[in-house]
Image (tube, rainbow, N blue to C red):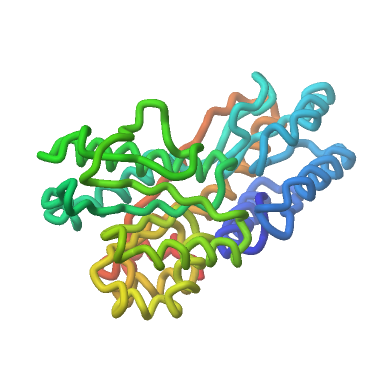
Length: 326
């Protein structure tokens, strides 16, 4: 896995263990201390290969860093399946299938919910009185996070372009990894600010969030999307466990991604408009299932494990609550 520090991965592990029990296989579930520890994950993958496993499930922190291991697995005929973000841009034939969320579409759902809540403020924006929507991305290398940032950006640009603001009134700026060649860059009414902390570590996510909040009033920020649990934690840490969102930053619409106790509390209290939940249990379950089937020589294909929007009105419903880990 990409790490073990977030509860998300513990729920992925629970799903993996369930699949292992169902299919009668033995698994190990490993991950580096944090999602910044790329070389540690490379060492873990190399060690896994040395054990001559029947198959490997991999959520790569950096595809380029594991190219040698992927080639070795192909030579040794050890099937590898991807899970969560998978192994984006892996050499042809090295990854049998992926069990993952369609992160681009899931983040687009967040943009739809935010746009609905902010439509009046967006349409009232002018070059003289612009508004800003901030997108907090934990890093600029992991495919799942890149897809979320881009999915939110593209859907929001599309929705705003259909208003009287038009595409010409939008400006996408910030981290270059999240600014596409065709992103509008000259508009002056609505700014979409793509933010990436210095590293994926919590202290850097918090520092980046503090820098954003220091400019909230000056930039007239009206919305913020946090693309994973790590950025949510940073935002909450920067706002007195979210309390400042109800006072100092009242009116700022925040949408998160994933779950965890702190994020769930923020949604339940109305500090966040809501969040996007993946299905981490199914990600883990399907990863092991695909790996087992690939080992057996069965045909396998990518599996979209799904995503939903939850808020304080529906988070206790059975179909949503089961996806919200602490």
